[in-house]
Image 1 (spheres, rainbow, N blue to C red):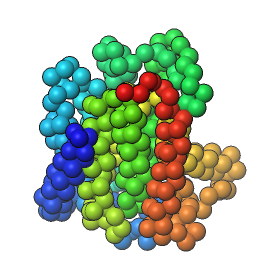
Image 2 (image 1 turned 60 degrees about the vertical axis):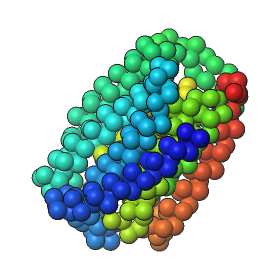
Image 3 (image 1 turned 90 degrees about the vertical axis):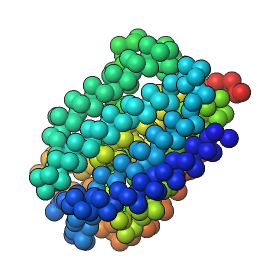
Image 4 (image 1 turned 90 degrees about the horizontal axis):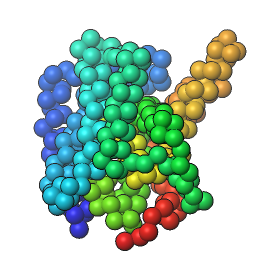
Length: 329
């Protein structure tokens, strides 16, 4: 019941914040600067308000605080820790967005600056979760239902790599109206299902709030978008997706639930590598993958529908792969 309530509260608060936030962003001229190297028809999006991720960040927090009280009273802070972890990434994204808006350019923080800040946040989260007993240096293999004990230092390096990679992959996916929201909504439902199946109510509440917040955001962000989530929203979502995977002790499930994020990232890596090795040749029309498909004639609505469907199917398969991780409640 609290899971459903969390979803509803997050939806309503996020939608309400959006009604107030978008006019304010417009008044502040907090418009997105579009890269000239992107598809030329994206230039029409120039000036669309960014930092819209604030609306679901607020909505998720309100839902978590209102519905998570019983868990907090019992000393269960797993959901709150994951939210705060995601919020740190959201803060990094907000500063990046602010720099872009202030100086009217598409680049805010430099890549090394973002990487170091994200790495520090990842390590802090891992240490915190371990110190409170939420993490052990074990690696669970989905489908095979086996667990390997690995040295703590190795686990920390692995976790930091996965977290930073996931956060940036979600950020890279946010390049078409509604795409990052649509792809992440099935992922949130996957975490709701897993948390409910194993009895991790506090984490289920957070995941449900994410789904509710994204539903509300999609009202404003579906093509043609009235607002973009910006790095504020996409880095927050990346932190939440990665944080929940580790809090539930199923990080390798990200290979399936994050299949779209991975495909987007790999297309970008392959394109850049091949371009450098061949001195200017390309494999894709444009990277990441959604731009390649756009130039092939796919509409933004089709991209949203196909990528969201693939994400949902992968999440169903992932649930089957991890359902035996712990005894059911």
